[in-house]
Length: 68
Figure 1 (cartoon, rainbow, N blue to C red):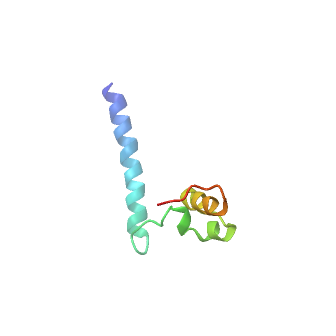
Figure 2 (cartoon, rainbow, N blue to C red):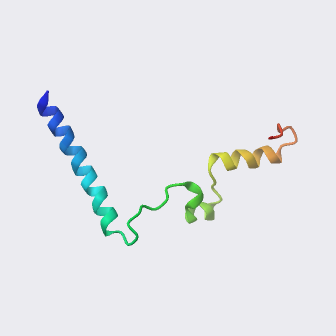
Figure 3 (cartoon, rainbow, N blue to C red):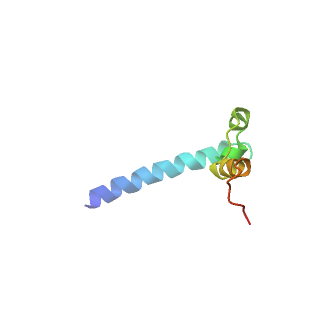
């Protein structure tokens, strides 16, 4: 039981160390945004987040329920 907990703690510690290395050696020390609306490749393909796509489809439909 204790052996499993120690192995788990070691795996978590190694993962945290890799994250810290990325933060320390990155120029601004921060991670890039993972949101779809911040990705230029997704914008080029016309892909938006699901909320934006839903809003666009509701505007196009004549049977859409109006938003308040």
